[in-house]
Image 1 (tube, helix red, strand yellow):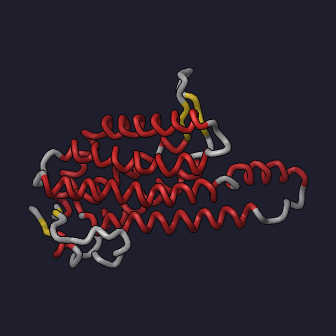
Image 2 (cartoon, one colour; image 1 turned 135 degrees about the vertical axis):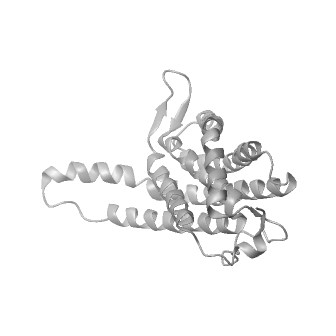
Length: 239
């Protein structure tokens, strides 16, 4: 059941693909909101952001999309996440600019809202740049390794592609978000920790991911191998 990507684009988008795409976008948007909430790992000299709770899920879904549907459709979903995250960032900033509430009792809530969502545009700008680059690297590595390995060793491909994508993501994201807010040593610490934790996250859930991918391939009748395609990240209409 090996399908060349040149013909996969002629098929319609399945309900499962739509659900995966929507979940991917939700994970990205919510993780941007969670990022300002940093936390210490149970007394250890390690600090993480709240985004680590959900952001790795987007990479797992990215692996599934690339493995089953191919790089072209994964690229489309990456850009969907980019556009929707930008929309949420713009809307959250507009809401923060609205006048104060009429009643004094509501002003504390408004201030708390502004303190949280006022950071969303900054984190989203950083996230959009990092995510676009990191997710593209993740999908590219996954796609190329699948062709090179003739579709074997999914587990290794999923882990290595995620490590590559997460490293690229972290190198862009954390300096932009925390520069001037956190010491340089703290930024390096959180960058390395995030990559390690996200990778462990994927390793732990890998058995579930593997079973899901096998089931999805069988149900969808898709197992795309990206041969002779363009990896240009801007060719969104090329499905």
